[in-house]
Amino acid sequence: MSTRRQPKEGAGPERSALAAAFTSNTKGGAMIMKSVSIFLASGRRASAQSRDPAGSSNGTAAQPTGGSQQAKEHQGAAGTGRTTISRDNRRILARMDELNGKLNPKMLEMYKRRTHFSKVEVEALCKIYRKLVANASMNSKALAASNPGVIAKAGSSMDGIDRSVFRELLHSTFDIVTEETLMERIFCAWEKGYEGLPIRLEGWLMGLSTFLKGSQAEKTAFCFRVYDLNSDGFITKDEMFALLRNCLIKQPQDEDPDEGVKDLVEIALRKLDMDKDGKISFQDYQEAIAEEPLLLEAFGQCLPSDRATMSFLSTLQA
Image (cartoon, rainbow, N blue to C red):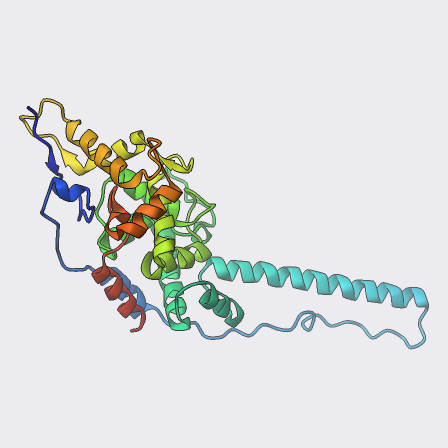
C-alpha cells in the first residue's frame, strides 16, 4: 500500500482546502516589503511639465493683405496640416508617458474610475511601475556591457514589466512562493488579452486592482484563467494533475509517486465539477466557489494573503 506524498519544502503556503487533506502545515513568515518601500521612499513626485501650445514655437510670415484666394487656401491647408501633426504628436507623447508610468490628470481620473484604487494609490502604483521598468532597463544594459555577445534590447524602458521582474515582485512583496508552472500562469493571466507579453501600465493597474481589491467574482475569473492552462475554457483532469503534482514530493516508500495526486484530482472533481461531465467549466467553478469560497485557490496559491495585501496597501499611503 503506497503512502501519499508530503508537501514540498519551500513550495510556499498552501491555502487549498484540497491540499489540507494531505498536510496541516502552512508556511508562515513575516512580509517582506523592503523592495516596494524603497521604491516609494526614493521616488520623487514628478513636477508638472508645461508644453508649448501647438504651433506657437514656429513663427509664420505675415501674409500680405488682399492676397489671392489661392494663397489664402494654401495658407489654410498648411495650418490644418500643422494642427493634424501637432495632435498626432500629442497622442504619441501621451502614449509614451502612459507606458512609462506618467499620467496626466485626465488619465489619472480614468484609472481611478476603472479600478478599485484612489488617486493617491494610482499615483503610488505608477511610481512603482516606473521604478520597476527603469531597474529592468538598467539591468539589461549592465548585462549587455558585461557580456559582449548579448545585445541590449532597444527601447527596453518602454517594454513594461517582464517575467523576471514580475516573479521577484510576487516573491518579495506579495509572499507568493510557488512552483514554476503556476508562477508562469499568474504572469500570463495577469493582463487579459495580452498573455505572455510584458505588462504595461494599464495592465499593471487593472491587474493589481483585481489582485488586491477585487470582488469575489473578479478573483474567481482571475484564478480560473490561471488554472486553465491551455485557455480553452475548461480545467481538465490533465491540467489538475499538472497543477497538483508539484504540491507533493515523493517519499522513499511510495510505490506510485503519482497516486496521491490522482486522489486529489478525484476530490477536486467531486467538489468542483457541478455538472459531472469530467471537467470543470467556468460556470462549474463559479457555482462551487459561491458555495465554498475556500476552494477559490484549490489548485495552488495565486493571490496574496490578507496580510500581504494590507501591508502593500498601507505602503501606498505613505
